[in-house]
Length: 134
Image (cartoon, rainbow, N blue to C red; front, top):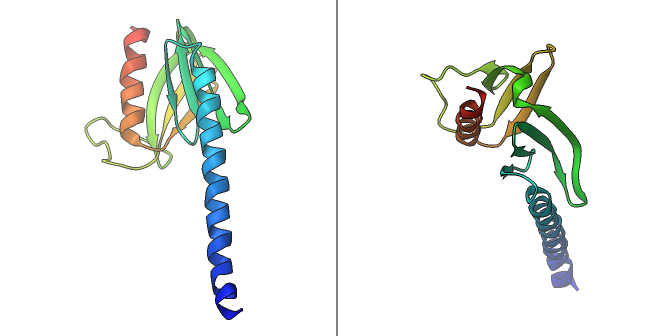
């Protein structure tokens, strides 16, 4: 019986890991369906982002689908930045790793922050979207 009690915490951890893995798999599958409508899209544990024509759509991935979707036009962007720890990143001093946001300043003074788990991925999307703003 003592050995059974020792294995019980491991069983609980295993069940929790299996449940977490299933939830993450469901998020990715929901994203795949959502992403089919876009020219280019990205999945991140923090947010999804898609571009179709001059429209940008982003939201939060869940196992049930994408929630809190917002759409705005590239034509409505007055400025784009990459922020790292709530500070604007200068392109000559980009961190090697860490979380970042792609910040969109819209012409109506609204600010939209799309979170990324990797600053390099945010930089790639910044460069990709900058091509369409010119």
